[in-house]
Length: 322
Ligand code: F6P
Image (tube, rainbow, N blue to C red):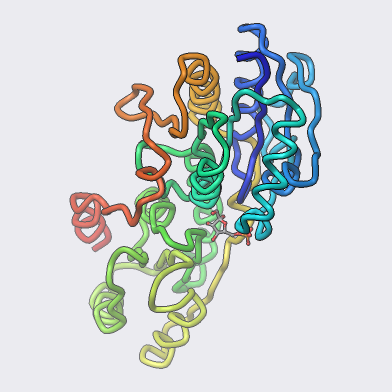
């Protein structure tokens, strides 16, 4: 192995830069030439390859976003697109590829591996934490901290006005941000795609708990099957008109910001392990951290969700939110 490429793809997540830095510096340490591919699979097809060295990744470990930019590519999902990408990979004489991204990135990598023999290693970069084979994805911890910080502020005003707030958090297919952040802010209820949302039950809970608390926070994952926070709030308002209800959608604020210490450390470990996995001859696996240890999971298994939520946590939420 002489030359490797690294790229980021899909939604950005805090810690991607720390991971890029680890990949580049581990590559340089092992005397590999390292190039970056800008804009993910799009840049692979459009030949956006740039040289990287130890200096080009200085002072990025603490920065959110990704210096390599990112994209969600429709063209790469076509065989013509993947063939274009392969031509460029060959043109640049790449011997190994590190892909940093989420579910869509690894599904793309799986398809690519059908026409491309060059080994690919994945680093789980998504705030959603919806990949199998790792306890925490890059950016998840920072996103949760961002949500907790924002909802603490909402709680102050909710408490002052005796209001009910519906706060929508990210997670198209997964409620893990909602669950963990919801526990962290002491939410009265957490609505997620993995659990059935029963509006009647929510109304009952709101009615029965009304005397005890002046403010109430309901965390809604954007992918909840009952609709987004606005739709659910409308239904509740109709049934409980004396509640002074408001909706806040946190949106892309959750994807930005400086990575937490945990994300910086995990990203560094994962990027480091990715390059060493390539050198060892591994291919088409995602690097994860499970029970504090590095674990390899084939792409095909990493993207098989939906994950089961921990039932102990769900039970605990119900008891603690009374
Ligand atoms: O996959 C990460 C994520 O932030 C999801 O939580 C969210 O549903 C989606 O990306 C939003 O994507 P976009 O930035 O393309 O609107």
